[in-house]
Length: 220
Image 1: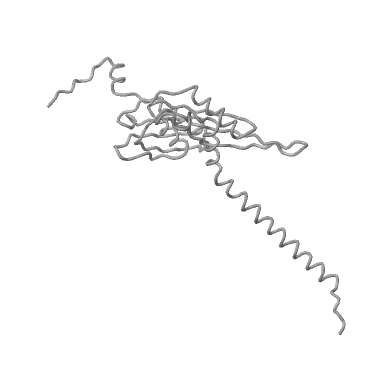
Image 2: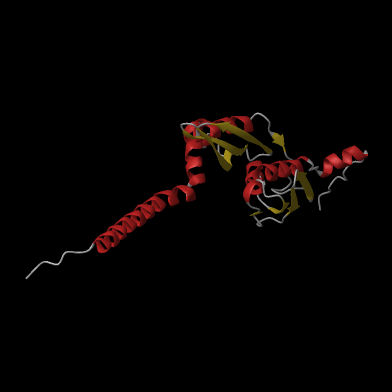
């Protein structure tokens, strides 16, 4: 019996199939390694925030609160390849009526989070809170973002999301209804929320501006 010699076309087809299968396996492996990193992006940021500022984040007091709202990555193409830079938006507060935000940029994620965390503590805003909620409805605007805040009854919780939730939670508000309209840019939403909280006035403050006094409550 004579051995059959395969022709050149069959050899090329078999080689192409092997190369194709190897490429598919490599692509699957790369997707498997990149997918978790994309989903755990903010979780890793929180971990780095804890590592970079342990005294402030690791519950030095029960009211300390810091949260990474958004992390952005920018790449610049240069002769040697790509250079990456990062920016972070962090909200911090004492959960007792003071809240602030910070924005930082750096070449490393941990460094930009550290910068924004320090910046958020430099400019803290005092917020008027009444019975764990806000005293009256208010609207805040910044750029294209528009945020509506409404007081809620006890037990409602924080009906808000994204940057709005981070700000009101850091301020110590426990019951609120919020609606974000317009732009969903995280920085503008956070600034619009702070603008709304800055407009809040208690009943005593409004009466004092009008030159009136609150009626004294008599015991039954």
